[in-house]
Amino acid sequence: MNKQEYQELRSHIDLKKKWQPLVQYYFAEACLLGLCAYFMNRESMFFCIPLISVLMFRNFSLMHDAVHGAVANNKTLNNFIGHWSGMLSLLPYTAWKESHLQHHFWSGNIHKDPVMALRISLPKASPATQKIIRATWKAWIPLLALLQYSLFWSLALNHAIKSRSFKNWCSVIAPLAAWTIALSFSPEGFLTKAFLPGLGLYLLAVEVVNFPHHLGMPFLTENERAPAWEQHKTARTCIYPKWFARHVVLNFNFHTEHHMFPDAPWYTLEVIHEKLQQTLGNKQNVDILFKWTKENRPLDIIDVISKSEEQKKAA
Image 1 (cartoon, rainbow, N blue to C red):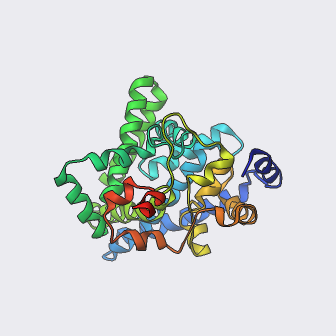
Image 2: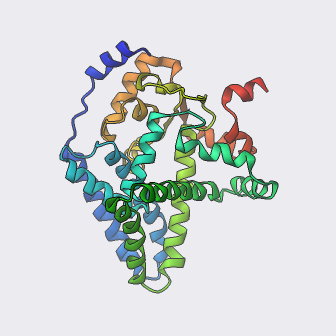
Image 3: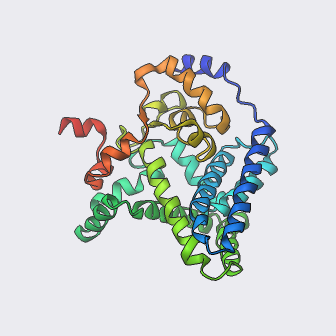
């Protein structure tokens, strides 16, 4: 797609932020939190596990939208929601925002995109480390998602240190303090029987939902960067059942659409996908019903991470 085609398409997309989807979102959040509170004080505490994982992913997705100013027109409200959702998804909103915007600016650049850090470091890891990573990947143990989360926190902490900003330090401290306080007042056994398994299930969802978006895609080098109208070349969209896409991951699966229109609220991405399909056709990279995960779970994950699809075909 060229710039003129992109601008023409953009002019026909409604990017206005609406309050109704946000009200519906928080109504669903209240229901999920209410159910979690109901089960956490009973012997059926294990029912909290999927609720925690869904709550964390939904809040990660909303925080991600807030990073792009796509939640509310009012900047203060938008950032407040970003901080709140960041706390619930155990991520520092302000400090994470910097690295994520760099990811968009350098999308697919193997050297400058912060998300590409594991793609570079893991193939250089020790044989013992690689063996563990391969084994956990095939066993569906989300070690890689945990490493990615560690990378997010490392980037956020480095940003807070370098900026010496009180706001950034508050962003780093708030999620840790909030969860520490919440867990300290939770019923006995909640940490081990519900929260940690729920966190593990959430991290597994991060691997299943997030990893197909960029792994195996063509990558750029040196100072190459793709403008918005070309970011369909470095991102992949995943197609899920509508109920799952809309209500569990907040359309985060429409990742090409998001990269090309980062200021688009989550509830517009489905329409944007349909318009992009008409424009790009088979030039858009699409993964249907977890096909990427099914194909790559049995494979050597180090090889999956380090090579693009073109390199694999050439090999």
